[in-house]
Length: 90
Image 1 (cartoon, one colour):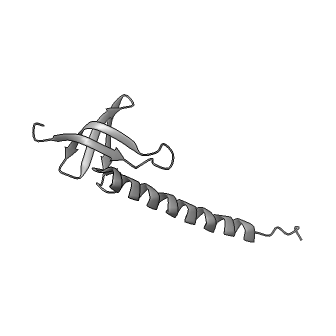
Image 2 (tube, one colour; image 1 turned 45 degrees about the horizontal axis):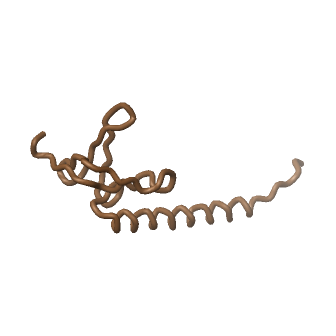
Image 3 (cartoon, rainbow, N blue to C red; image 1 turned 135 degrees about the vertical axis):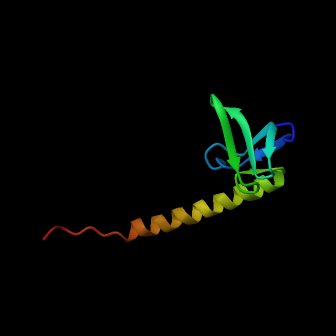
């Protein structure tokens, strides 16, 4: 475990519900995953640039992309709901 680096990262996995979280003293494993203590156990986030980021700018760009994609998805769902027409049973 001595080969693991610790640093500050920004977690975006829950950016649309919790916001971007800054986490200090995180262990980076193989430049792919991070692990930290939380909620009574060990939490892992996978995919640098997807669930976690080394810089605020990268995290902000990812969160903004997530926001735009969610809005696009909701607009599509709204269109489908607006297109529904109910008819009386025959």
